[in-house]
Amino acid sequence: MISPQLDVSTILDDLSDCRPWQEDFYRHLHQHPELSHQEHQTASDVASRLRDNGFDVTEGIGGTGVVGRLRNGDGPCVLLRADMDALPVKEATGLPYASTATAPTGASAGEQVPVMHACGHDVHVTCLLGAAHLLTRHRDAWSGTLVTLFQPAEELGDGARRMVGDGLADVVGAVDVAMAQHVLPGVAGTVGTRAGAVLSAADSMRVTVHGRGAHGSMPQAAVDPVVLAAMIVIRLQTVISREVAPTTPAVLTVGSIHAGTKSNVIGDHAVLELNVRTYDEQTRSTVLDAIRRVAVAECQASRSPSDPEFELYDRFPPTVNDGEATARVHAAFAEHFGENLTELPLQSASEDFSDVPTALGVPYTYWGIGGTDPDTYRAAVAVGSIDTDIPVNHSPYFAPVIQPTLDTGTSALVVAALAWLGH
Image: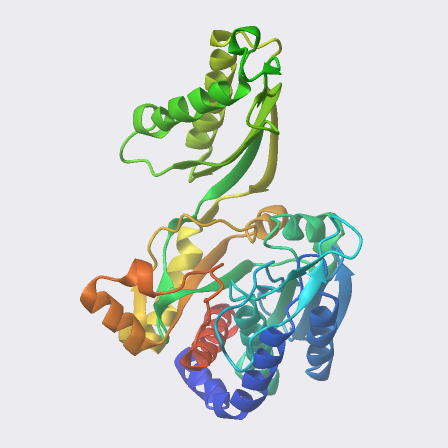
């Protein structure tokens, strides 16, 4: 029997051949980002490369999603996923391949916003294409079916659901395991795994409270929605501190309040926009129910003329790694990456990858790769300035170093896939 590690080494010996085109592809993709559900050119470029590697390709799933399927004899079916969309952020990295792209917002005719790959999805796409290329070149080292899924609109939280609703299960067939990765602040060249909860669920809520308008000089004639909104904000600060156990992580943020139009006019309503992050359904329900209870009670205390209105939107599922699948990948990573394998800390960010394996009814695991220049990261650690000196995802300064980030991400996908597909 051939050693799986021998298979890995044989395949990854060709990384040096991939490196030039991967780096060029990454720079091009970084320079030409596309917003959620607008990933038309990215999807076309991805589909073209997959076809060149012999994949059966299905385009347009969920709008701009792309699925490549490569059957290589009998064996398990492994699904690897990369997200493709960028963010409405103006890049400030100063890189020679920095994005200057803009895109229509859809809010009004002719309005454009700057666009940047500020979350590293360009890394994810490039690494998955590299892994697909390497596994195609070495079909003698594995058997089974490889599915590569390039997903749109992760940033909106609906890309995975749209692909599922557009017949994804029929396209991919029976799948045994699904896997994904994300580039994060951390030493480039390192990989981190974690069993159980990894990413939080996210829920945004819009709360509209009603008052009674009046002249600013006659507050006695009004029910002031600004004061009402302020009392709700203050009371919400006790939800996490007094209703959730100290050992249970959760976040509740009031990110926006809009009320009134002029300094001497008391308006008739206020709109609060909140964001909640939790890691299990019980805590999720506790926090969301508490928000409703507090808002209703404060409206009654303020003599609001009508009940508050609640709208949930931008909802992301929790990412909870399967124990057995994660252990299998961790063991393969330990053999290949050695001391560069770490434990991924619990993340308060959210994403929608888990909607795919949940819909397909298969186990999944999700890991992180570092993207920060090692010297820069260690210098920041030495002076305790990681939070201020290391740009994080969604920052206009977020710029993973090209290498060893691409090599690491590509290798991680190959190693993980071979944990199932290798001889």
